Image (cartoon, rainbow, N blue to C red; front, top):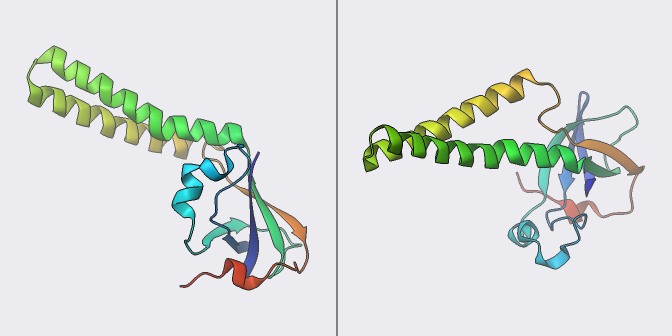
Length: 152
């Protein structure tokens, strides 16, 4: 599981607006050498809108969890598939015409085709796009609201 902590900032209907710390996570063991954590350091908290259970209230400390297997599948679909499709399109363009223009057009067509296929697959296959879950850590946390302050 990939886990981040946050504070419920406000509730809107059955949705919770959660301020999530942006220092990176510790679930993968990379700690201070994590590139995502380094990019996020010094930024304001990230606000997420997530489905909330009836027991959540403003000020509650929550854990935002996501199964790692779902994230891996999404990364493959979002990053690896378009890259391979682009290479396949470039190879097909080079084979059909042999010119640099055909190779470039094939690469662009492969990349755009992969994006369309990914978008259609996400809309047709329920659960393909991972949805983070909120787990309440406590009601009315001792964590400062200022720690997760976000400018609008």
